[in-house]
Image (cartoon, rainbow, N blue to C red; front, side, top):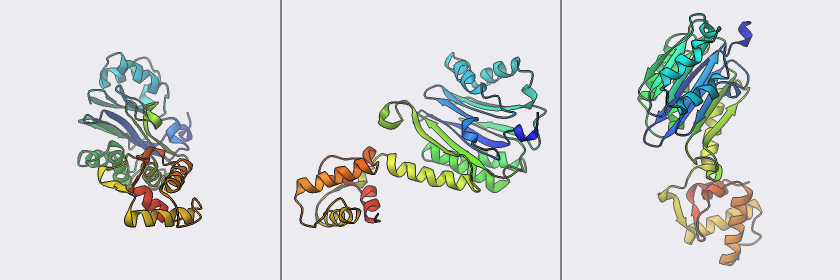
Length: 288
């Protein structure tokens, strides 16, 4: 085993009992860490497998959780017959919010993990222990959507020390039943930064974009297309090339808005005829 094969990583797995969401956020000095570490299934749990990572821990761990094992029981069974378990690291949170983390004795320092209500945080080849403890503290003291809490935990970990080998990739994976595009799968958030000098910052940027395009419209952001809103919409759609004149009939304006929404990937924020999402209008007004 070469140290270059080690997924030198810090990660956090979490569960939101209010929404039923499970998720993982991870950063590493390892290319495309999102292809190895994070595994999750709606209503079942989340798994992070790292260090001298055994990717089979992901699907096998979820199978054990689905069979009724707790997070700790799943880890115990995963490492039981693994001859390289002392080089492994894994964190799991189950459907009830039970959490567990394992760090083998032969993982490179600093290496370790902590557990709390509805989360487990772990890391290896870190600058210090605080990278993990601050990750957990940030998660415990935050509110809001699970995805935002997980990214915030990564940011706190990086500020506290981070991966001693540096920064390269990051990922955010959150699942919820029917949470994916069109409600056809459970992938509520599935973002990866495979190679970047500031992977966590880039992950935050991508998450903000993902929320812009696929976030649900807030009640207060439902605007009626009339008055100033209508004038701004017409002006904006002209700048984007979806209208050719300010003199348009209601049907023509609605058709242009619908074409814009479907072309520019805002269909998750599409409202009934005569209304528009405030964030979509603001995006239109920023210009092409």
